[in-house]
Each structure stands twice: as structure tokens, then as C-alpha cells.
Image 1 (cartoon, rainbow, N blue to C red):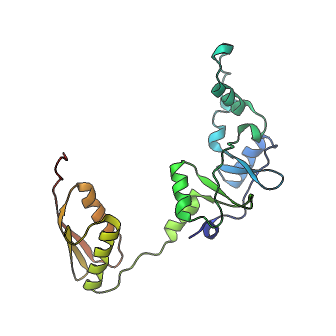
Image 2 (image 1 turned 180 degrees about the vertical axis):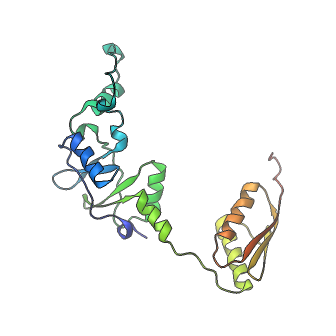
Image 3 (image 1 turned 90 degrees about the vertical axis):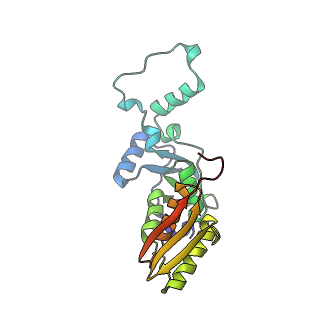
Length: 225
């Protein structure tokens, strides 16, 4: 699945030259927590979000106490500009991570998680064509069809063994799978409760089984507490 399959194409964007108050009004009106900032050629030049506006002077009860000039750092100056700047260009984040319409959704989801951001502008030939947000990713999860195993105990057993090997690196020498009337039983030894839990999650995540029976023994590897 690619970005073009889930992205919002009617993107609410803003110019870097407009006022911060206008940007906030647009965010509130459209129920969004951030806006791509684009220039006259529709090229992304920044992103303004709720987080960029949390330290604004409008929400402070009193001005900050003055500091000696020699104690004012570059960071202090940047914070002052963000807190007091009049236009979007003064408060927006300029280092914007973007993706292309053919970017894989899995890669976009990883970028959102790693960089702790809520949205990714989608650009084509340097121009904004869409946006993918966390909510779009959640929609993919909600709409994903359940994986239903083929009927029959033998088919279920084969599917479980295949997934144990591909997902967790566990072969039949480590764990043994048996299926009776759709109920999956797993025997064997694992090194930790975490691996035991991972096996349970894997089996229970497969549609079409009647139940799961855990007969695994946890035997920590040598050197583990």
C-alpha cells in the first residue's frame, strides 16, 4: 500500500506570510493540529503545529524576567522569536520530513513513530499533493481484513508453523504445534516469558482458530537471570 492510496488530497495549507492568529483560526476551523506551509509555487517550506505555539506570549500571564545580555543564548533567541513572532514564517518548523505518493505506508508509519510527528506532507515534483496523518494510518488498521486461515486442522497447523518460523524464527525442533478441532496447542521450550507471549499473540492473531492452549516451558538460556 502506498501513500497515494490513503493520503488526504484536499490539504488545508497556509502561506508563511500570514499572521499566527490567522493560522490558529484556520486550524481551529478545520479541526486540524497542524498545517503545511507552502510558498507561491505550492512547494512545502515549513510546517506549523500546535506544538510550535504552546509557548506563545499570548498564554503567559506575565512577561519573562529580563536576563543579562551575556546570558542570552541562541536557543533563547529562537524561543523568543517563536513566542513573539507575528507571522507563520517566524514560528514554523523548517526541517520538514516529506514523502512521495509512491512511498510505502509502512515507511511513512515508521517515520511518524521515529520522529514523533503527527503528519507527513506528500510532495510530487516538489509541490504539495497530499498529506498522511496518524489518523490515516489508524484507518488502515481499522479497515484491514482479518487473516482467515484455511479450514481443517492440518492446514491450520501448517499456517501456524510457517508463521512461527517466518515471524519469530522458531522451528519445529524448538516448538511443536498440534491442532484438534481448530484448537491450537503449542509445546516446547522457550527462553523467556516475552517469547512465550509473542507466540500467544501470533497464534491468537490468526483468524479461524477455535482456541489456544499454551504448554510451553520457560527455560532461560545460560547466563540469563
